[in-house]
Length: 409
Image (cartoon, rainbow, N blue to C red):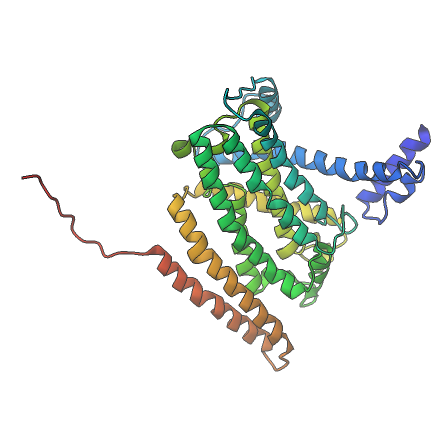
């Protein structure tokens, strides 16, 4: 037993020290027949534990942050400064009665929230969290991420249809329309990174951003290029819509839809929907960090000696904080505004960004003096002009005229 715990602590130390093959020595203590199973458990359990803890902390910090933004109190009753509020919320959801409509399809009604939690957990498997912290290094990891994420629409439809409630079904349809509309710009914004990196592997994409420019002062992150900045903004907006976050939280707009596809859910199944929402937000934020923000690389070369996973999670927390900030400050869109924005602005801009990324790639061969500045200006103009044009067309401003009244004779 002493050797077991010694090997376990040695493995944890190697993980924290960014050493490769941290599990190899520990797995030698197990028979070869069960070693793969133990390896899977050692990979999956930390991911679930870390992101479940991050979910609890994020809900607390979000409610406190929104309270500060909106000039009101956040959670401050349960425990010192309200830090035990997530525990109280979890106990409440576990002990609340699970009410199922009499005419509901009980099996599908039960499976919908469970199926919704699975895609983000699978998506965590291909994200590189550190130099040697990649659960599964897949050559087509980005494709796998979007493939498993596409199944969330099915679970939303399952929830709305199985409830046998018109409000739930209509809410599910509106949620699916939103998710499909913004999934296209989300994928297209990622394609620009795939084109430049020449790989679908998240590990390879992070490796392409490992260099430092101007003597280590500026990192070679894709977000610091014109096409990368535009792609990151498109990715960020589409991620808000895919995660049902404000100002795109139409599926949970209680004032319009009575909570949409969640209308007939209660208790722990109701909590699973919000768990899936936050896990999805963490997953898509992690992909954004991987594609545009250099992954686990430090922002400056002299800071590259710190543990790599620290930089990844700092960037992840920064993106999640940005999501919370937007929720507290930006009002909700109407459904027509939401769909018009997706099809009339986001989709053309994401397609145009692919062209700009191609121009950036082929102009990389320029070697004359000031070539980098010319490339920057050319690509920036190619993005800025359509941005202004599409933005003005989307606003659809009409000439204001005096109102005329008609009265009955």
